[in-house]
Amino acid sequence: MPGDDIKRLINDLTSADYTVAMEAAHQLGLSGDLAAVAGLCSVLLGGHEWVAVEAAEALGKIGNPSAVPTLLEALRADTWLAEYDDMAAKKQAIPLDEHMGGAISSIRMAAARALGQIGDPRAVQGLIRAVHPNETDGAVRRVSLSALKKFDTPEAKAAVEEWQLK
Image 1 (cartoon, helix red, strand yellow):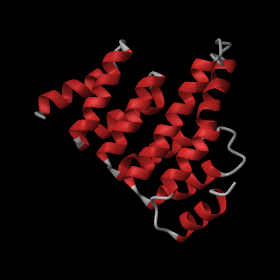
Image 2 (cartoon, rainbow, N blue to C red):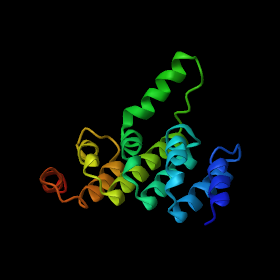
Image 3 (tube, rainbow, N blue to C red):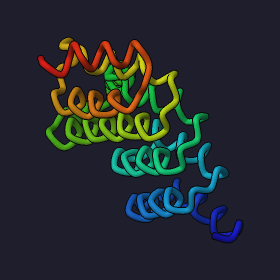
């Protein structure tokens, strides 16, 4: 994909029309272009929730380890709870409906999948935390366990052995 197209898609990530931004994230993932990583990381934590899902998936496809810290942050439940705390402090309405809860779960699952695709060992401890029974989102636990199975470290193997039976 030509550089001008990549630049346009990176700009489209912040479109007010979230469907345009979602498509841009998707196309950037297909391109595999490393120039897209910073923009995708930015919308993963600060964009529309469904754009964030596409961004995480795109980062997994691109496979660049520089995305691991942002993906780990997206995987953590308290990342999203902190957003609610900030909204409450500003006396803003907190969207705790099923749609928002589903979106957060989808973001976290996409982040776990991407971490498994990238395969950087820095992801192991975050994935282990996400498969622990203290994690209340069963879908996030299952996807994180699946991602953890892709790692060939002693910690990952031990966690998979311990948690896949629970």
